[in-house]
Image 1: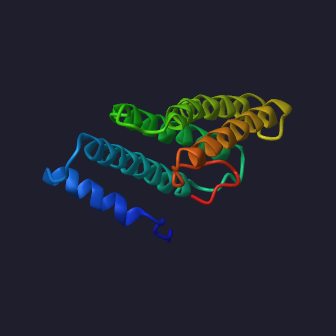
Image 2 (image 1 turned 135 degrees about the horizontal axis):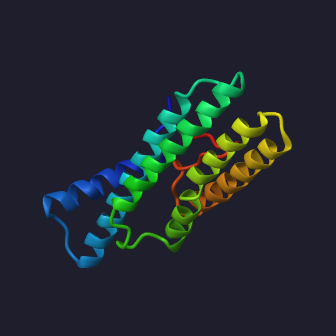
Image 3 (image 1 turned 180 degrees about the horizontal axis):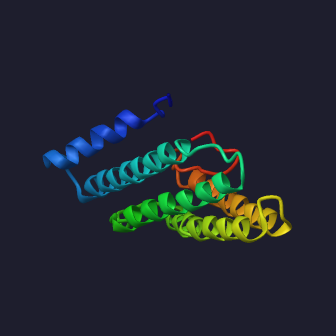
Length: 160
């Protein structure tokens, strides 16, 4: 079970005020909108994390191929949901950088699945594909941290 993040109650309160039409200046409404979108982004990430966590362990080549293929689909679904959100509401610049890095993960999962299929999971090509995915995931994780998206880390050292 994941612990609630500090400030989560503040985000919920800001969203509630925005929905209720309360609040004052347009700056406050912009902040509430940014908080709302950030909460939606983190929900998409939580859903993706739950799906990734539910994948079976890669105990053989077939399971590894299936895991990479299903991971690609999970990330594609998340990217689609993220692209539907209004991200022009005062989110930090690092958010767009994170999204650009995150959007590359599905293709790298597919590349790994292809390498596993063609050469087996112990091949040099498979290792390169896995390393490329991990490198990109670590880059995306670092950008998620800068954007304050702690629930949007997927790399090997993530705690999401």
